[in-house]
Image 1 (cartoon, rainbow, N blue to C red):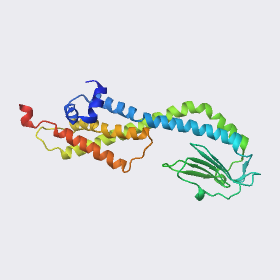
Image 2 (tube, rainbow, N blue to C red):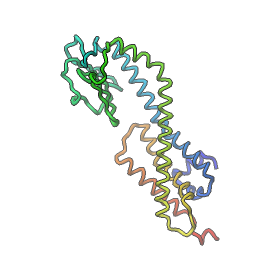
Image 3 (cartoon, helix red, strand yellow):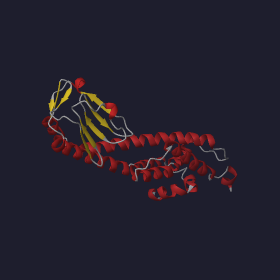
Image 4 (cartoon, rainbow, N blue to C red):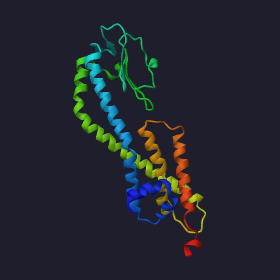
Length: 257
């Protein structure tokens, strides 16, 4: 059967999932790789767009919006006597050489870059927030130095973004195969019918049982919607689909008829 037709049937047909328990392992593995590839498309597009937009905003902010400054002796030095906050749809840039704004004052719910009196901070909601003390980096920089460095990174984006997407794909594939293997173990524990199914058969069924939650969360990613208890919902639906598929496996008596 065509692998794309299997993708569609896996969404709503436990009976079809049960019928694929004896298919070649190579085709099942290929199906999983294809499923992961499709599922990361929204995330890859969003990450690429956010990186490019954020980079453009950073270039503009450094070139036009931020006053001249120097970083020396572990401090941000500028003649500007008030904090500067530049707000864009995708990124907020904060500049404060006065010491009025501290790390604890930063809003962790928005994408932002902050050049503070003694620290440099990057905030990405839902991710690890990083900050660096100028004194720990032991550097001396001016605005023109940073502008030149940022502009030099422009040509690297065409290489860095594909590498990042490949890393995301490989990581997502590894996690998906681990998840399928764990789901298959759960399937072995809940299967109680007559036909003898080995782990490899249930593993194939588990690979198709994850399609429905994977497609659902892919759609949520398109709309950038966070699903409450998404981890547990994903596992609940996957186990339920596998359970329904296992019920479609004929018993030993039915198989003989």
